[in-house]
Length: 120
Length: 205
Image (cartoon, rainbow over all chains, first blue to last red; front, side, top):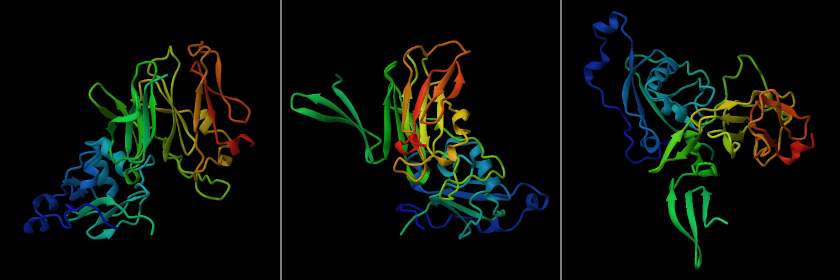
């Protein structure tokens, strides 16, 4: 896998203290994961790096795309599965469930959505 | 004969004009992108361009007074839970637009009506210049769809759409036909006739 873009940031910036659960987390407030997209997709549709609530990839993307419906069609297919040549990593690990996007997400998760290099 | 030609290529949409010395490129849109199909609607002059972005899927654009705007891409409804469909090789049949393979304007008296043929074989109709699309279920639900094949792609597709010019605004009691070598079947009552021509190999089925 690779992004194919020269400006892609390999890591998201995160304040050191953000890894420590705050009172809101303890009270059951929605968990917020950081989501980032490649520069390449920005050619077609704006997908800004953002924090989104959700306990699974599905929940995170549903919440994200609720405010950016056009971007949804660039990442997900007609059946809401991850497009064949797209990939998503959570904290450095590629997700397992491309159809239902059930992979768990926590409040410190960093989610990267980008193009996969398919084929040989 | 028109002196303008739109050429869809893997590297963009090129507009060429006939001059004294032949055809010359005078404008390029979507430079670097894979433009798979273009339609100029003779009723209002609008252009529609289908793009295949590979990773990001198929997209559809419509011309405006100042350029282009992305509009809705025909999309398949949710596949029923538990439904298992395989082609004759045992490969799962997918309910997602893999390619826009045919675009056709509706009848002269149906402004805004467009037809779209796709891979994997769904025929779509729009009544609002492509703002929204409806899958023609009578064709998609045809019992022989699982046997569709051919056309040079891994999945079947509708590559040609012919609108019946005789009376596109006929009354609602009249059923229009989609024919492709199998017994003719209704698309929807009261809609312009569209003949979807499946790949040649399919005609023999």
